[in-house]
Length: 425
Image (cartoon, rainbow, N blue to C red):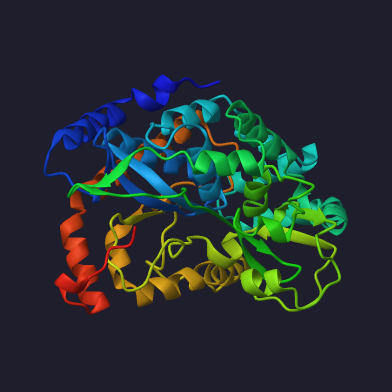
């Protein structure tokens, strides 16, 4: 079992934390126009999915919090959805939460989340250890083909995903957030906020957006917003852990999340389904969810409002390298990887191409250059290195971000005179 000192008191973090504290005291350090009575600055946050690389997200949010930044609206996919939900539920919005979440993470053997048969666990360990030697991986898969075929045919995944879901449920129950109603109550607990120009601001609730892919009706799902389509909320309140379980169900690695007895099953042209999902067909009685990264691994458009100058920015944090070099499609695994990468990122890329200003808001950790995103058996030292990498990239981002410059860029893009620009609240 690891201890917090390994993460929080190594030389890298000590230096970064000291610099973050200096930034917090600097009156010229401005990243948002929304502040609270303790002078915390508020931003929205979107976190990319990336399996075990999600440890780096905690390094990022830790340094942000140490610099006096707090997170308002939260969105994420897969690993990003885990941190988004825990940031929303493990404390008040004006509190630092990354260290608390890190405490839960350090106590957990992450390889326990690989909860399939022992043969599968050993196979995955060896496949990861092969480090891209595709012939070695293929041989090991062939040797275990019957077992894998049986698991995929019966369960559509080699790991049930129950160990992860139970771990998350236990954390949420400690924070009285084990129902949708409890989650919604937590999202409404907002401190006194105001514009730094002494304008009173009122928000009804924090927005949380957890992205999943529901493959039965081919729908991009946003939880908790669309929970009523899949649960009869008058009879059954879903556990918020189910939202994240739906978002991180990596195809074939984890079993899909299956929901049965949907409200309105059999009805066609249901107004709620047409409004929220754009689906007109008959509502199925059973649906399956897989990793939201298949449709939007980086839902950076979650809080975007057109033609308005924001009072607070939407920071985005990417775990993976993104179109920095071509994929090697000369062999089958590389071809498959390139194809899946295109599917996962093209929706988000389309938004970024149409909203060039977001380039200033995105921190790129590029953790996949050094770490395997599926290595749940990551050595302790590499977990620390991942955390440090996220923290380092966060500080680099803060060193270069200029809120006033961003607002000027946005003014130009929305093509309005500065005096006529409206602020959204």
